[in-house]
Image 1: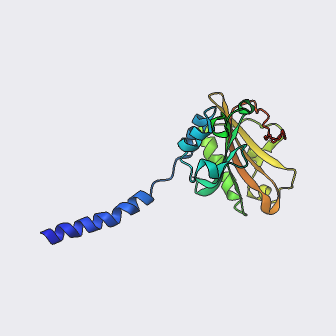
Image 2 (image 1 turned 90 degrees about the vertical axis):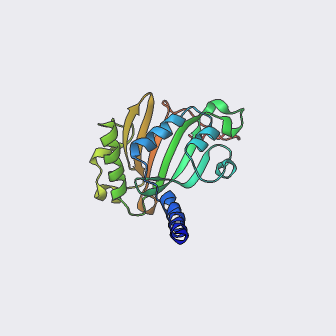
Image 3 (image 1 turned 180 degrees about the horizontal axis):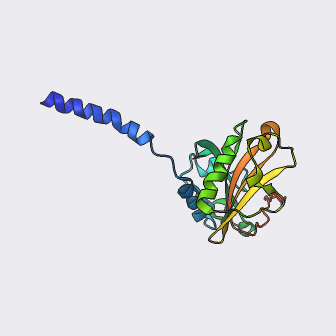
Length: 200
């Protein structure tokens, strides 16, 4: 009897780490809502709430935003995560400055189907998009159109939710084509580096 019990305990100990590692992927709606909840909160709190890997000190790049490479998986793709402040916290520590933007972004690396998949998922949750100023409608973008993009081209879709904005965009050309999802507080306020250089 003892041997059987020990055997079962060994099996459970082996299975538990597997269960812990194989957590289900977050739904796109849950992921977007979690990011939206961080807007206007101190950036340090937002970093912790998003459960990003690494430390605040490692993420500070270079004392004007928080950047975590491969910090989140969105619809099966590892994406960088950036948390940007607005311009109201220039006199405060970086981590106490209010977040005005959370961005997920990644180079496509010839995966032109991914942004189309992302667009369809966001549209399913938030409905018909609005036109983003200065960009081509994302609804007209297919894999071939994205593959043949030039350096000045940009496809984007805009959704509004509870006073905030969700913007999906694809820009760049060749190997530098990047897909990003911005969750932001409108209007976009200017952001300055400590030396006074405007970065947004």
